[in-house]
Amino acid sequence: MKSDKVQALPWDHPRFRSWIAVGRACQLMQQALTKALAPLDIKPPHLDILVNLYRFEGISQQELARKLLVGRSNMSMLLPQMEKRGLLERRPDQWDKRILRLHLTGQGRELAEEAMVIQTSLIDATLSTIPVDDCGVVANSMERLIEQMLSQTDRSGSDPSEDRD
Image (cartoon, rainbow, N blue to C red; front, side):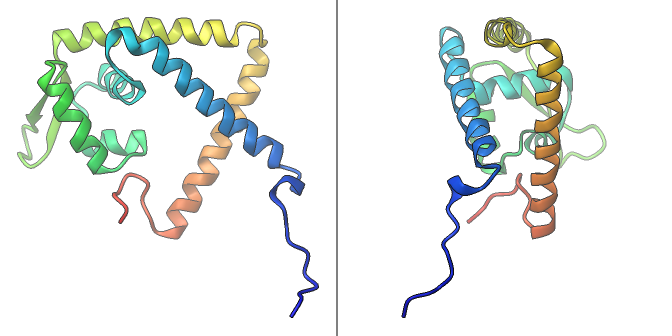
């Protein structure tokens, strides 16, 4: 039996171009950042951890996972690697020994600073031809998109920082 209902095609949606542009920009930024960080022998997820520990010294593993929108399994893979390299330490919380607090080592702090110079240079090189005001408009739009997507995740009852089966 043939349906009279017309199939909705994604490319016919008025916001499809935005969806694709955001996705492609994210992929290209990740590729460029991966290539730029290669001499330091780190990848973007390592940079995310280093930068967050640089800014929020003593953050818990759970807080870090929530900030990065990743599951505990991602943290449990990356943190031991970084700890073994001497970049960070996990220390028990002084009031609740079940909570581990994350701290950069001297070597981790130096690597974070080197990586941030690389990231900042990449941002400058990539966005230098775009007026700062336009960058602000894009940032505001992306922040609204992030809020929207997080609120949809919250309503669905799944936490983006929780592991999924």
